[in-house]
Amino acid sequence: MNSNYLRIFIFGIFCVVLVCSSRATFAAPTDDACSLLTQAQVSAASPVSVGPGTYVTPTFKRTCTWSTSGDDAKTVAAITLLLEDATAFDAGKRLGAAKNVVITAVSGVGDDAYYLAIASQVGLIVKKGSVTFKVTVYAGALSLEKKEAIEKTLAQLVASKL
Image 1 (cartoon, one colour):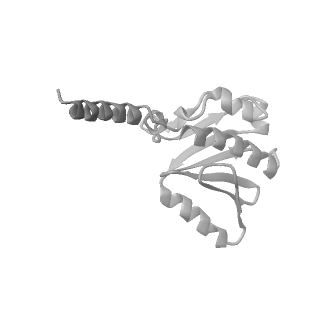
Image 2: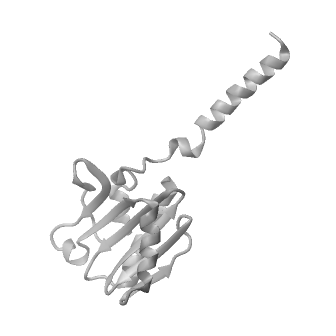
Image 3: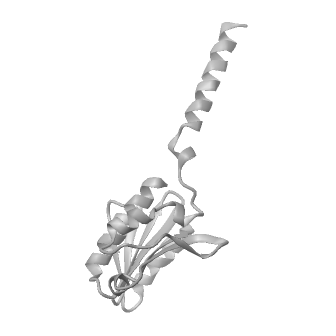
């Protein structure tokens, strides 16, 4: 075998190995929200323990909900992760022009992120590459700032897997 062909063959094998070992190859699936956070991670970020993540329906896996029970439900009712398409990110930003909607930029999460707050409810919407997701803490007993802190912690975990 000619040494030039051998070099090209070895270079080709190197490229295949490089591509197969890249971070994108091992990235978490972006159509299964419950695969992006564990029950332990959500409980650690929250002031209360949550149950295992559940889907809205068995076939729709782009939303995962971690619920609480008993007295914990008085503090935090549920935490959700919703995987969205890129248009949802831009649509949420446009809501900032509406009355009673507050958009606040967030740094340190994904490629771009913002809190979308309406009255006492807030959600953190994040764009990472071609994926958009929203983390929301449903908790009447927590301040807006505490909800935002929990959402940011969880969003950073999700973004690190994408």
